[in-house]
Amino acid sequence: MRGFGTPSETLLAVDDAVAIVLDQIKALEAETIPLGEVHRRVLAEDVVAVADVPPADNSGMDGYAVRAADTPGTLRVMGDLPAGRKSLHTLTPGTAVRIMTGAVIPAGADAVAPVEITDGGAQSVHVREAVKPGAHLRRRGEDMRKGSVVLPSGTPLGAGEVGVAASARRATLKVTRRPVVAIVATGDELAPVNEADGMSIVDSNSYALAALVEEAGGIARRSPLVRDDLDATTAAIEHALDADFVITTGGVSVGAYDFVKDALERLGAQMHFWRVAMKPGKPVLFATVRGRTFFGLPGNPVSALVSFTLFVAPAIRKALGQSTAVTAPTVWMKTTARLKGADGRRAYLRVHVVSRDGVLVAEPMRSQGSHVSTSMVKANGLAMIDGDAVEAGGVVPVMLIGAVSGS
Ligand code: AMP
Ligand code: MG
Image 1 (tube, rainbow, N blue to C red):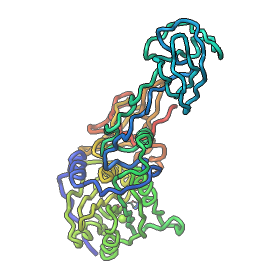
Image 2 (spheres, rainbow, N blue to C red; image 1 turned 90 degrees about the vertical axis):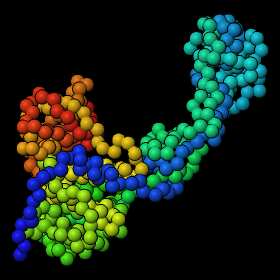
Image 3 (cartoon, protein in one colour; image 1 turned 180 degrees about the vertical axis):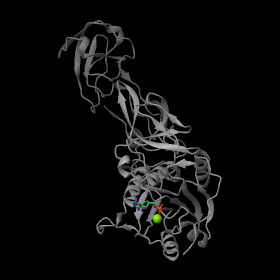
């Protein structure tokens, strides 16, 4: 049997550890995929407008295309113009064309009188108020100008961006490929979810981490469970190295049966850091192994999820091509209960962030033990405490890790 490992005395500050991680990560290669699949990817090329959008001046309202100088007044209606139909008329003084939103403005017209300021007539129309030249016109090229960059390379593609790419007539886009993330759970006590019996602990980390990997934009691949044995741990990590990132859980502390660090040394890994000044999650290992990125996360479910959120999620986002805003946002808010610090380490306490009368507040989970996985249920924030404690009603920084809903 082995003895205990020797813990190093100096712990790395969380922010320094995050900087070390991000420094090692580069965007992966690009691939070209159909527009329908680009949501949540990051652009790896500039999208340029190939034509003016809109392609011609058109109406912003249902109403009448007019000559502004003729308003107010009664005008002869020369015809009807639904969206998508081209006008055959040219307006002469005293005439109008009934027009629908989006229809191209007929020649001679310089404004649209909305139907609301008219009597809505079909043969002739009375326009009650004066309209200014240019009123309710959407100008050609107002949205996009032919030749202009409408989405620069590096843009994360949300709904708005996907719509703009479609308007720029792009059926495919070049985006950064998603990192494949292998998840390797270690521990003699663990059993797969469908084989657990009396004394076993279900491997829940693999599933929760796989969900977080997908949320961050990666492709999760769960590996078989690994026993607490140096050969088995080494072989499992080596096998997982065909992924871009490898994450292990458990076996990374100083226990006599913690083999992740030794396995990495056997594989010739370059260690970047091992222990971080945070609670939960102190034993977190970050290394490069044969060109792959390796994270050794602790086994306790809360520690695993918190350390993933702090270190792995930003790394996945950067690999995905994102260059800014790779870490979760922090917002200051009041806590509804006392939050206790962690003696020189930064405490990350699970809270439920809710909107109360238009103001965000943090409701701490009742139990904060790193083994209490149910404390992650409904947790959409991590309150960060650097000092001793913050009393109820005090203001704390909260990292937002999930959607905030109303009360
Ligand atoms: P370790 O970091 O290996 O010392 O693990 C600490 C504790 O975390 C173990 O005693 C287990 O109770 C728990 N644990 C480790 N791995 C997992 C896992 N994959 N799923 C759920 N709990 C785990
Ligand atoms: Mg273990």
